[in-house]
Image (tube, rainbow, N blue to C red; front, side):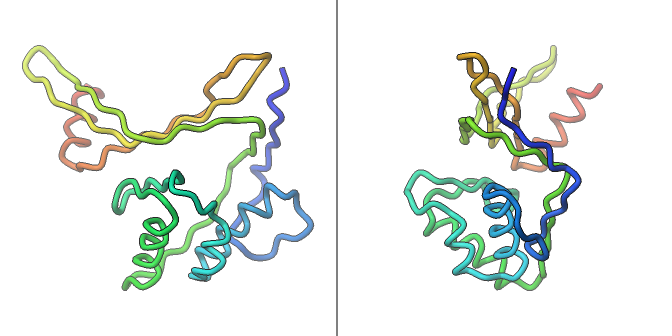
Length: 155
């Protein structure tokens, strides 16, 4: 089985100090350099400029297209708080597809039924002619719903 992946978890990427790495790592490096230096021009260069790109974050949900995504970064960069992030414990996978969007559904017990809305990202790799999921991320925006869901599921 060849997933064409590279485990690079020993690296920590914050946008500074890494040279002569693969093009994949340099692309990631560009994003973190832009973010941590609050460089909007470099940030724009790290994103594809099409209407169907999306950013899904805990601050304001899903944004579509660079114009809306750029507004999100501008809000962070011009905000009162300085935000710094590093990327670590990661691997890079090639030959993949990813899907971003929302999930809706419900959870219920004998006494309650509550609707769910979840922001979701799913990533798949092609292995021997079949797409197999390798990553999923889901976030519930509403803190009260998240708390109720966690308390109900973890009982």
